[in-house]
Length: 96
Image 1: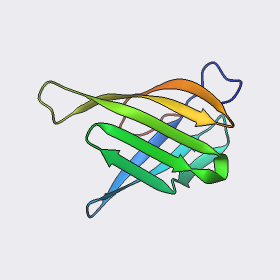
Image 2: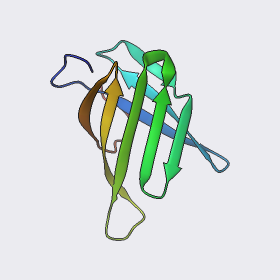
Image 3: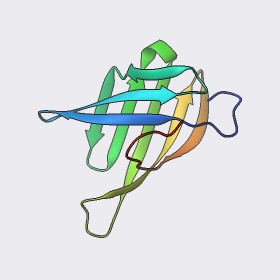
Image 4: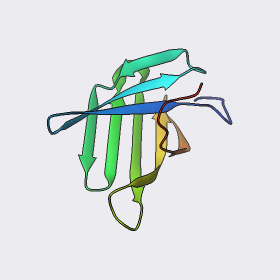
């Protein structure tokens, strides 16, 4: 993300019982399926941490009017003391 104006990245979320896990894929960073060390969901707020990359993503889910569909996650990517605004959009499968 550092030094990039436009980069494809994806978090893949999985549900294990009542716990949510996430993994990061970013062809620009050469990362394919790196698991997050922690995923914290508090109402519409989400925090994903991957200390190996000095990475923290914090965001807010934007829901459809029905309340049962995530339209996007507006967030901030923090890495190496730099913050970059990020918008995550749902896809069935990353295409990069």
